[in-house]
Length: 84
Image (tube, rainbow, N blue to C red):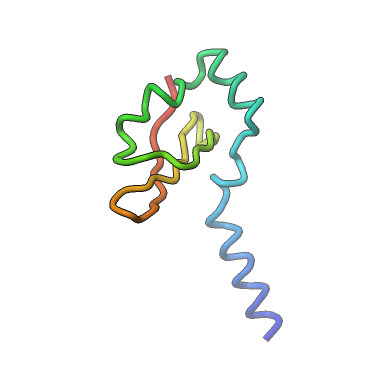
């Protein structure tokens, strides 16, 4: 049983590397100020609803915004390209 739990944990860990690469607010401000990523306001119109939470994350060689978006009474996760 312990082996199954360990395998499940390792499987989920392999799925979450993008979350682990999310930046703190101060790091995100520095990346946007340096011009490596666009400000959230530049992509907010493509979110498809009201943004209730936003994180700037490093993905591959660029950046994405991982957004929690409220639309029609439901919250969904949306990823938008933030790289310049």
